[in-house]
Image 1: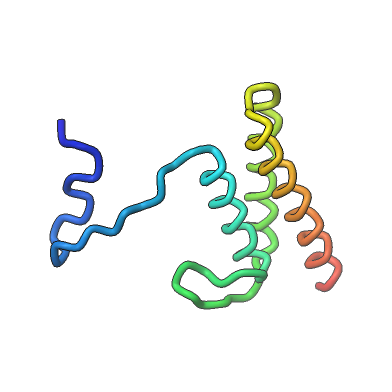
Image 2 (image 1 turned 180 degrees about the vertical axis):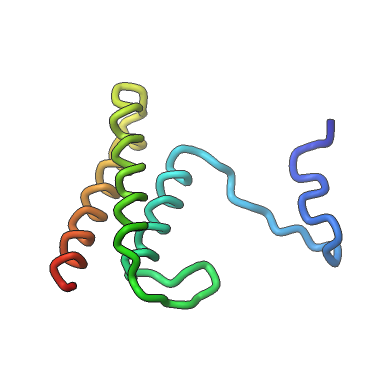
Length: 101
């Protein structure tokens, strides 16, 4: 089996783009950013800003809520804080965006 990262960018000009190490916090922040993009509060990874898509934002927020429910009692204090703060912020932003429509 190949070592981690080997062949990640096969066919590129020899440069390797290192992806961040995946841990719980990175996962939560990635989902949070997706929700922010769909709320119209953050640019997409390409830098473009698009129209809000509240349905997709709501779905991502619901996924984070499900994650919170299913991991209750199994997270470190910091992981729990990141998840709960992210969810609170996203839910408030979602309410604001919903009222603006």
